[in-house]
Image (tube, rainbow, N blue to C red):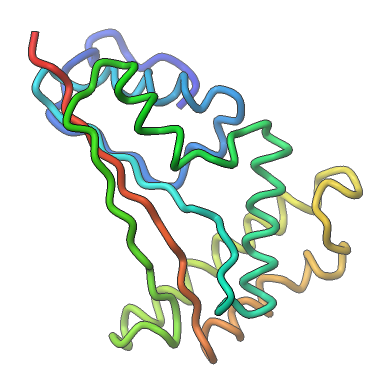
Length: 181
């Protein structure tokens, strides 16, 4: 994402979508939005989906640790913790119009009324937690405000908590249309 796409892709897509990846861009998050925007044809659309990464009163301890790990990694990468607030302005600066957003509450695990989606939410969130825990374990002590034992046990604790009580994971979908030439 941080490197230019093939030149022949410039302004060649009617629709460009990105989901939950800008955190990895660190201080280049705005540049990445511009790079992705450069792929959109005039008159085409871009859609970006990112998490608010806010703790909700309803979150259990394992999900609160999930959010803590994510926010800490954003900080380590020197990325914006206000990403969902920043993106609309970045799109407008890049020449996009009709920039709008919608907030959605993703129901994970036991809170999802669809049993198949509930199971998938537990699985996919646990997979993400395993990757985050592995990465967090490579960081210098203190970068994540949890003990190494808490980080190591986190994926299993999150899996159990999601299966039993579930969690709400707020996401923001942001979109805009590139002006026609």
